[in-house]
Image 1 (cartoon, rainbow, N blue to C red):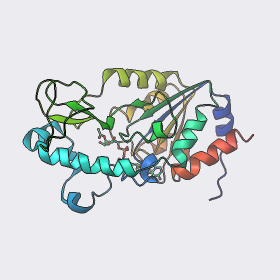
Image 2 (tube, rainbow, N blue to C red; image 1 turned 180 degrees about the vertical axis):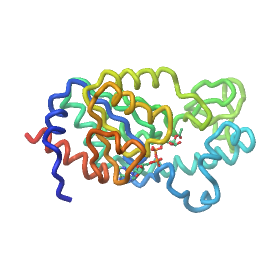
Image 3 (spheres, protein in one colour; image 1 turned 60 degrees about the vertical axis):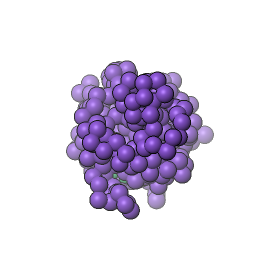
Image 4 (cartoon, helix red, strand yellow; image 1 turned 90 degrees about the vertical axis):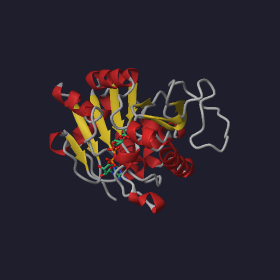
Length: 247
Ligand code: OAD
């Protein structure tokens, strides 16, 4: 794939003091992790993720939701970071300030070496108690599904943000601060439809900050972006890095 990047994009990126990046499931697609709106496969095909990833679904059928996450955890555990994840980790070493905000719960950015990742929607490999909220990363596999909290005997759940739940205030405030402070905002591999994450690039746009979308498809924000790079992030990001910082 031969790619010509707009020269002023490369200049803006190279001269940026603070680069902010928002990633979505598309950045993990080339690692084999289905994007959120991909069709579910196998026995989960008949379930709509938006009906499983909710507190109501968990209350109604905790074992089903826990087993669905066990299946998703098995997929994520096999996944490896792709060239796009590594490129973002590399980019952070070229700029004075770099903020990586992700909607993904797969931890692949951290595996690729990114530090201080803002995980807006939590991390699927982490567990907490549905009742007392305490993080519980060590629990007895009693065969019961879901397992029970060692502190209050409540049911354990994945430590991710479900539909209808609020994002952690700390993560969200840090993300908005970065969107307001950055010199360039990159929105990568996201359909830009889930709030409040999708309002982060808008926050930057409204301040006149240059914005870049990297996605093979169009999204509702495509027409408003300063730059649109149509293609897979695992291909475009390494090329963008090399074009901006060739030596
Ligand atoms: P989606 O599945 O909604 O969108 C994935 C985006 O990635 C789409 O726009 C694809 O076109 C694009 N894409 C696919 N392959 C790509 C590739 N190789 N490189 C770059 N882009 C690619 O996933 P998200 O936008 O992340 O929230 O969804 C956001 C949130 O919606 C999820 O975190 C989840 C869901 O509600 C919660 O679970 C709370």
